Image 1 (cartoon, one colour):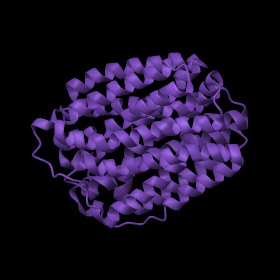
Image 2 (spheres, helix red, strand yellow):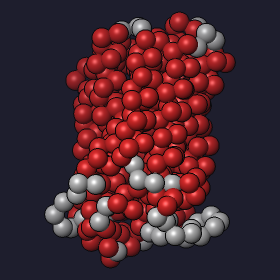
Image 3 (cartoon, rainbow, N blue to C red):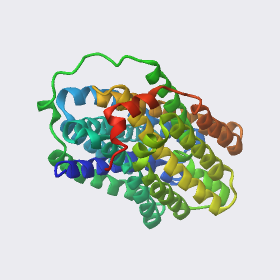
Image 4 (tube, rainbow, N blue to C red):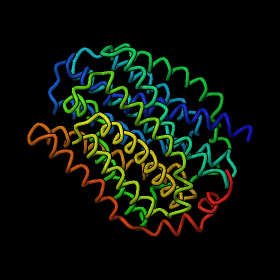
Length: 389
C-alpha cells in the first residue's frame, strides 16, 4: 500500500496534465484561439483533430517502449512532451505552428497511459489493480476541473494559461522520475508482435471508435456550442468545463459498475447518457440544460474510458499496456476523425444536424455486444472488483 499510494497519485496527476491540460483544454480555449489567429471553424476542427492524431501516433509507440525500456522512462517522456507541446501552443504565431504544437501536446496523452498500466501491474496487488487503474484514469477529470478556474481567472489570455500548464507538466516530470517504477529491470522478456485480434477485441475497437468520435462534439466544440447557443464567454465555458470535470470523477467507479452490471450493460447505459448529454448541451437553450448535459457527459465519458480500459486489459492480461493501447487507440482514432467531421458538418449544414448525428454515433456504439462481460467476471481482475477496495 505504501508503494501504491505515490504511484497512484503520480499516475492521477500525469493523466490530469496530459489529458486535461495538453489535450482537452484546447476545446475550452478554441473560441479565443480562433479569434486571435483568425481561424475558420473547419480549420479549428482540423487542428483539434491533430491533438487526437498525436495521441494515435504516440500510444502505439508507448506500448512498445513500455515493454522494452520500462514505465518510468516513458512516463517521464510523457510529462516532458506535454510541457514542450503546451509551450508551443502558448507561443504559436500562426495556424501551422499551432497545429504542430497541438499535435505534439496530443502525443503526451498517448505516452501517458500505457506506462501507468504496466506500473500498476508491476507494483499493485492483483485484487486492487482494476480499482487503481480506473482511479488513475479519472485523473482526466481533475485536469478538466482545473482548466475551468484557469479560464475564469485568465479569460481570453489563452497563451498565459498554456504557459502555466507547461510549468505544471515539468513539475510532474520530477514526480514521475521518483515515483514510477523502472519496470524494465523487473519484467521478463515480452512476447514480440502485435496482439491476436479476437472477436472481443474487434468489438471493443468498434465500440470505442464510435464513442470517441461522438465525444468530440463536446470535447472539441463544447465552448463554441455554448457561445453560439447561450452567448457564453470564457467564464461560462470555464464553468461548463468545471462541471464536466467534477462529474467525471464518477468514472473512478467504472470497475465497480462493471462488476455489478457486466461490461455490455454498463457500456450501453453510459453510451445512452453520453448521447443525451450531447443533445442537452448542443440543442438546449437554457443554462441549466447545458450544465446538466455537461455533468452527464463528464460522468459518462470518463466511465466509458474506464470500461474500455478494463475490457482491453482483461482481453490481454499478459500484456496490460498493449490491452489498454487497443482500447484507447480506438477511442483516439474516432476522435481524430470526429473533430474535423463535426466542424465540416457545422459549416456545411448546421449545429443542430451535427449534434444529432454525433448523438446517434454514441447510441450506435451500444450495438457492439461482446463476451468480455463473462471474461472480466470470471477472471481475477473482474472478481477483485467484487471485494473491498
